[in-house]
Image (cartoon, rainbow, N blue to C red; front, top):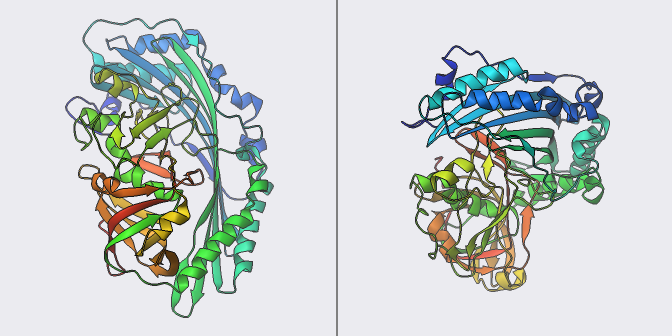
Length: 519
């Protein structure tokens, strides 16, 4: 749901003004019909946003949006093609594809936001949306939008043959190969599911300050879920591939890799013993372990909670918030990163921000609205799920930056502890920072060596306190590009996380009997 307070008007309230702008996006499923030929991102569809509205019409929409006052108006246009395929029980069980397109109009007046959208890109329907959004600013002087000027952004990386534009037969072949590799790995693999998705998205952003800019964004993900069974023991493994990549990515990272990795995890964890409970030194492996920083720390640095002072990190700039070996960055410019982009969903270029340096808080993450209210500049963190929502401050690729210690030396420093090879799901209360996270694949560390697998291990703690207990940081930074979707205020966006191998001096481990609290 959209957040509401005395300074905001909900989208539903706008639509009560008599404008019917809702229609369902086109989604289809069934047999493989040739997505590229039927719905594909051809040269014609790549240009459709430019062809939908002339500059004169765009300016008229901005004028309508500001016709009752307001400080700022914006048009966000989107055309997206999405494909989803699932293989289960050695068969393609589902094949879904569709087009989602439309436009959203936003008006900002002080700390109030008016927003309305249309699933139809025609000028008359978008003009109605602009008129509805304008009601938020029914007083004050009327602003005139500036003349439009195209802003061209030099891309941080270029895709020549995005996976999303490949044929269905090639995509299905990826699933079949991952499935077969998992089944061939071990006779105890009783079942395999492989999920695939990709998106090809074109966006255009125009605002009353004269900005006109656009971007193309592609993403893909393949996930294998092999289930191992031995007597009464069962464990489902998990492995992913993907990112904002070209099709030749799968030559360097063949789908068999995901099948085998997931099967290995499933079979290894069949023999896991119960996890020890209590305070323990914990070493977290490079990569997906960065989800801890994302959830337990990163959300507290987003501009809306900073402005409202509902974050524990409000007013903490320049103070020590982590141990001195910790450096944290949020970077939208990482090539092929899951949370990477050339421009955010307000047209601000993607940026790298150093949030924490040597344990000292350096910067927050802002969208345009919260930056304006805090008298600073956007950091390129304005993001939205689609044209149906207005942007809010979100992370991109957040990670603990490179350290200096050899990962093996980190392991050797622990006499008795836990090694978290791969984190699973969890929850966090962003107000207090309290969290719990399941460790999907965990091992004991005994006398400086990784030994026996353990099951049911859950990390329990408080984000601001835990980041103070990081005492060693490895030199093996890895930012995960294959998985990660962040939810906030009912909106979901792709996000990357990462870290080198790190050591916490101690964190509470909840054992097998522990039941995580869902917050």
